[in-house]
Structure formats: C-alpha cells, structure tokens
Image (cartoon, rainbow, N blue to C red):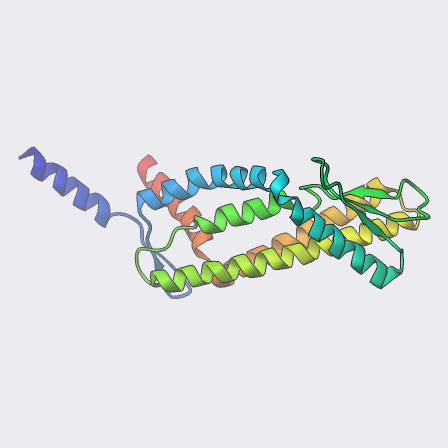
Length: 221
C-alpha cells in the first residue's frame, strides 16, 4: 500500500513539473540534468582554468604572443619581438623596441582571456538538453557550433584588444588608462556576442536557469 502511494506521488510530481515553451519549442529538464549543470559546471570551469595555467599549455601563450607580434608589425611596423623562456615557468613576453616606457609585456593566462574561455567551455559542455523536442545529435551539433564560434570570436576580440593596448601605450597613453578602457569595451562587446550566439543556437542555457527558478518557486508555494 505504501509502495502504491509513493508511486502515485512520484507520478503526480513528474506530471506537475513545468513545461516551458520558447519560439514554438518545448523544454523540460530532469533533476539530475539541472543538478549536474549547476553544481558540476563551476567545478569544471575552475578545473579548465587551472589546466590552462600548466607549463604543458604554454604553447597557447607562445602562439598568441607570436600572432599578436605579427599583427603589430603588420599594422603598425613596431618591430616587436616575442621572448620565450623554454626552460622556465615564465609566460612569454612581447618586446617593443624604442618604447617610451618599459616595452616588455608578459602574456599571461588572463591576458589571453583564459578565465573567459574556461567559463564558456565549462558552461556550454554541461548545458542540459530538453527531454522533449530536439534530438541528441542535433543538440550536440549546436553545442559544437556555439563552442567554435564563441571561442574564435572571443579570441580575435581579445587579440585586437591587446594590439591596440600595446600600440596606444607605445604612443604614450598610460597603460592603466587604456587597459581599463579597452577591457570594459571588449567585455561589453564579448558579452553581447556570446548572448546573441546562445540565444540563436543554445537557448537551453537561459531556459534551464528559468526552469530551475520555476521548480524552486513551485516548492516554496
């Protein structure tokens, strides 16, 4: 008799779970999906960030530094050079000769927006798929598109942020002033870019957040 009561309560709970609709699509998530997303995602983001800081991944900073130096010389003819420390745990640097200030800029994990990439990858990988609607294959393909486009766009945006930062500093503008200005501008542009991509290809991120709110709200009532 108790088994039947528990089964009835469970069926009623499942039937009463919210079903959301957006742009003529239906969304429904399980508790395990939501728990995995909201609990594991922060841990994954932190793990990716720490992983990017390992010595074995310094090739990322070397590639970014070389690419930035190439564009600096191509666009502004600054004769910049990349300094790499192959046997030391020191991030590569860009050296600009005849600089009014120091002229040496270390390219660290935050310079390449490592914290942003960690957040994007950690969040997108664990965005839950709806229990109804799109197929698993189609959902994974949308995730791949969002990952490729968002990371590529943020990478290029950050590269040009650094290029103009170094160029304007070379022209005599104090580093702190131009750094804060360009950081704020690129942050706004990057956030809008990411939100637009998510809204177009991966609305499950926003819907799952609202879905959790609806679940909590229904429990409180």
